[in-house]
Length: 384
Image (cartoon, rainbow, N blue to C red; front, side):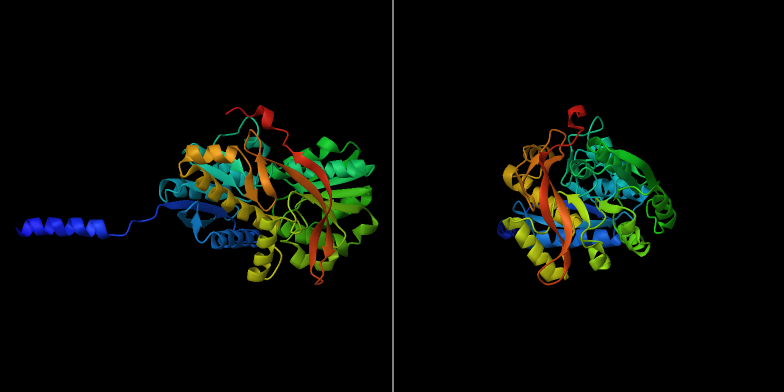
């Protein structure tokens, strides 16, 4: 009799116990330490803001985000990717700033049959023949943004240019993309050390070359140091400076007025006028005390994409989420984002100028649209 009561009581307890909501687990990898930590912190801020806006749920499921610091080291990134997949058993791996780190984690994650969603890095090596059905970019393919700068400078009739970028995959892609549309005289193509802080030797060589224009890709802290040293050396009297991913929401708080007037190209800007972007920028400024960078916008968009994939498919199943993301029309700070056959975005690319806003804060604004619905140059080589 006692045994029967125990079984009955247990059955009642099971019946009355509240149902546990399903959870989607995301491993978010970025750089949170060292000089590049300033970028990773903006991305973490944006992920947390997106989750706040979504009430802690993605597609109706409770969201659990595990942040990991890759330390800007490929071996660390690969170890963390294996941990996230095998030990933490995440449903999605996302984030990743640096192209060489994305290359390190690409195969371990995609072959584990879970989605890898980049919030920033977009190397050519995973856009063409090395593509994989489980990889998506919520940013751009590396070549796209400098392609727009190459077109702008070509259309502006600039006769000669000096190119400079860090010596890693993204740097090579950036200059390759630029040269795809710029057909003038490239006086020099210089590759600097990744993480370099002193650019005086390069500036001295540039001064001797005296190009009409200089186009640089120096992201994060590298960009802060480069632009400061450019100004201190009086290089504006030698060559006109153009840039991609060098003057942005990460570097502007340090550069301030010294960056005014510098032109760059980008897929996003804080002044893009749509409901999602307006709320994102306003709430980010209110919560964190400054304008977000494009890194933050793309991190925010990554969370929106996961929310969209789960909500529309009704599942966190990899195949079902993949199908939704591949179809495009993903709500983002850039509007509804289209997706190419290699899972890289098809999107507008804008010319941006560094200006002061109505409150005297230095930011960027769009001056023209260089490309509309611009696709990357590698998709035709991608065969899933």
